[in-house]
Image (cartoon, rainbow, N blue to C red):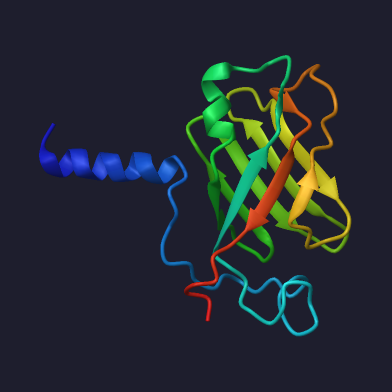
Length: 156
């Protein structure tokens, strides 16, 4: 493999594994959570957010080879429209969104759509939440917590 092809391939692999996309920049405004009088203040809506899962328990469809991938911080990129972000790594699809009723955060295995983490909690604009998956049956993982953060650099 030539050096140039290898370098491009390596960059693509690193991005898919959750490497931050720097610098952050403003996304389509999410007026529900960002702005004057909103929970996250007057700053711009970030184009990239970080989601980190902790304290997951192995479910019925657990694969120990994927544990480190689930516990790695992932960098989700805004999708068209306000208040939603998504990324896919080599095994899981990660999504997060805020709407008028709740905050949603899901991690599902791409191959079979089995859940590893699901949280649909009121109120909107929540950044720390527990999983609504409470048993191992039918799930990759259950219990656990998600934390959503973002880098303010580049959002000024």
